[in-house]
Structure formats: C-alpha cells, structure tokens
Length: 466
Image 1 (cartoon, rainbow, N blue to C red):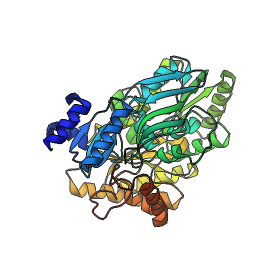
Image 2: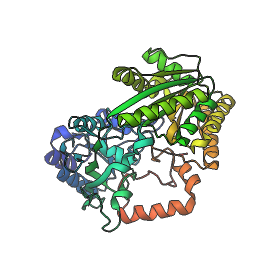
Image 3: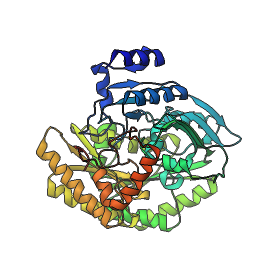
Image 4: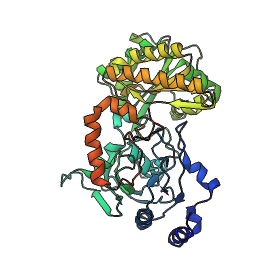
C-alpha cells in the first residue's frame, strides 16, 4: 500500500481502525461461504456516519473498490473483496441510539448486533421479530443488505417488513436519507425498498430506523416427530390451511436430527425421518385455541410423537436445538455447503424427495432443515473442498436441485442473497431482461461501479458463481 494513503487513513481513522498487514487482511477475504476467497487491500473501521463518508471519498479518490461489511456471516459471498479494494467494516459503528416506545421504533447504527437490539427492545417490553440464525453476531446493516429472514418469518415477516428509514453514503460520496418514523410515507420513489436486499451494491448503510411491535403475551411450543417426510410436509400444509399462522414452523430431516443430537444431546430420537418445531404466540386465548388446532392436525396426520413444552425453559431448549442445526452439521466435515432453496409450501414433500434422489445419485451426505412454513429449505452438503471430484458432485447436485425448484415456481434464494455464489442461478430465474433492469438500477445509483463490484451480476472474468 502507498505510504501516503496509509498515512491519510491513519490520520482519518486512527491506526487502531486501519488494517493493512497481510495477516490482518486474511480473515476479511472470506465470509461464511465455502470456496470463495477475496483479497482486500485495506480494511477501515469507521465509528461514525461522517467517517463512513470520509472512507468512501478516500476510496473513490484512490480508485479503490468499496466493500461494505458487517460481521461476515453471509452465505453467498456478498461481502468478499474479489476485486481488491477497501473493505469498510461497520462493526464498530454500533450504538443503539434510541428505543422510542411512543412511536414503536428503534434507531440504530448499522453495526448493532441483531440480538442486542432484540434484548434492548425486550427490556422495554417491545419486540423486534427478525431473527436470522446468526442473530448473536450478525449486524443490522448486514441483515438489511441481505434482507435476512429467520425462524419467525412465517408470522412476522423478514427484515424488509421492519425497515422504516435509513441513512447512508452513495458510491460518489453523497450522503442520503430515506424514510423515517412516519408510518405512512409515499413521498417519491421508495429508495428504502430498493436498498433493502441490495447487498451493498447501491449504497453503504450507516443508520437504520426499525419498527418495533408489542411483545406477544403468551406462547406455546410443540415438537412433532414423523416416520416419513411427506407426513411432516402434509402437517405444514394443513396447519396453514386451517388458518393458523405459527410464529415458528421449522423442519429438520433425519441427518440433521442426528447431527444436532450428537452436538447438543437433548434427547432427540435418532430413528425419525423428520421433526417439526412449532410455536404459536399472541393473546393467551388465541394461543390456547391455535395450539389445540395444531395438536388436532398433528394427530390427524399421524405424527409418531407429539410433545408440548411444559414451560419457557423447556421451550427455549427446543428452539435452541433448531438454532444449532447449521453448527451441528458443520462439525461433521471440513466443508459445509449450505443452500437456500424456497418452494411453494404445497411442494415441500416433492422437494425433499428430489433432495433424497439427488444425494443418492451423487453419493453425497446431505442434511436438510429450514423454515417449513415459508417453504424455505436449507439443503446442506457435508463435503471437503480439497476433494475436487466431490465438490464437482456438490455443484452438480445443486444445479439439478435448482432446476427442479425453478420449474415448480420456487426461487434460488429465500434469505441468503445472490452475492457471488448464485449469479448464474439468478439469470436462470429472472432471465436476461430481468437482470438488465437490475443492472440499470445499479448504474443509476453507482455509475462508476465502485460499490461491491462482482456481486449479483455475471462478469466476463468471473471465476466464481454458478
């Protein structure tokens, strides 16, 4: 790195907030996506909105790409610096500025951890529902960039549904603000909705205003086991058809159940084909009625075992077991390739059947879990990226699976984003015309192409992306 640039960065941010040595940069060449590595030239950690603006302007003057980064928990390579440049780490921009109980809003810096906001809202008897699996470490800015979901998405929606406003910096250094605390706001284009899910390609988000809601007064948690996946999928369809919308409706297959039991040892039966974790919440009278309806449906579809948590501690233990699914699977092999196939709920059983067929065909170990109520599944190949033949089979497995998913009206990403890993899949889903419209939007926001280059859109020099 040029000495003049390093001096400028040290003066602007302090040496403790600038990483430029190779051993410091190494970890910032990755996120949580296997097989993808970048090579940032420098990482800076602003501690204010103004410092983010300063970082963007320095990068622009020096001809550096700009890669916004939260905690690096993404699963599509969205914050990996594959074209070099400056990573702007937002994890030190981490103040909860206000919990406004009167307006039911929270205003936070982009680097606030998701669980920290949840806990701060709960201390005032308020509720921030989005809960991605990485909530203990993921940042609000990263959640917004990827439009993260979570276990409560079925009833409460995803991150987009709670974003009311934001501030940030465009690629040319221009500050922007959109939305705010007003519940209704149709003044001009909805820039907020364009920026949510834009994966750092349209602007660097520095501050967000989020909607909070009252805490549910009661909840009941149930666990049901099944001898076959089709009966579990039927239970999901019948619960929704009965107009019961659980807060949580999660599924795990036998491979995942066994990995979780190896990891957490909570007494899950190893011989079951699938389990459903179901939580209903709300007013006590409604919760009692909905729990009874769910139990009737589970009995009707002949669930092998049905358990209802006796208290909050037991309920939390059951939910925690589901949250450990990815960690449990990741212990089995050196490489965990987690995908994000989402299908109409009525096609869940067909999708599980296709996963079973394909894993046998390609000789792979695959555990599948996910948000059954949303039709959002996470088939997870347990592999070793040092084995080129095995990784080729992993990619062939997902290529065929996504063909099936798209043919039945599904999507290649329900919550993980496109990033680097799914650029080819996106083209399959929305076609060249759809990609061209998105590219025009990108060009309008970032005509110089400096913001998170290489993501979402297929480049002629691509070496990653399927």
